[in-house]
Amino acid sequence: METVDKIKEQISENSILLYMKGSPKLPSCGFSAQTVQALMQCGEQFAYVDILQNPDIRAELPKYANWPTFPQLWVNGELIGGCDIVMEMFQQGELQPLIKEAADKPDSAE
Image 1 (cartoon, one colour):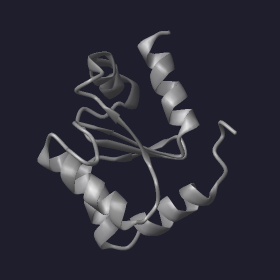
Image 2 (cartoon, one colour):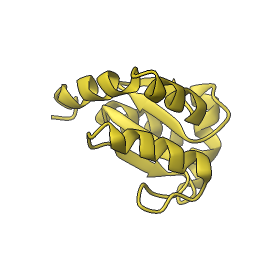
Image 3 (cartoon, rainbow, N blue to C red):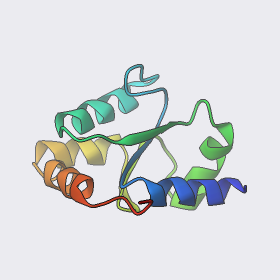
Image 4 (cartoon, rainbow, N blue to C red):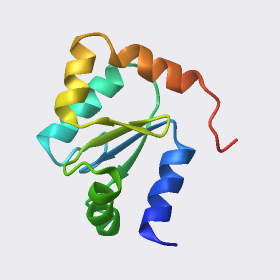
């Protein structure tokens, strides 16, 4: 499977998906750690892809998303943004309803 197809599949199968360095339990960079904390405080489950374990995705996703950095939060197939945007949305109370609404939707994979 082509890397871009794999990315598209991951995004379509997960209503809340975080591309990050490391894992939610063991983030490998401060920006990923902050983003995970904000997501966890929303209280919903989310999927993640460790780009350090997936160098093909790490190389292709910035081109596909037209977004150069990680982490990248995708909700309902749309790129929300990176750490700064996620943190700002969280502090303004915009992230929580977005995450809750996405979590309440049935997954497209079902």
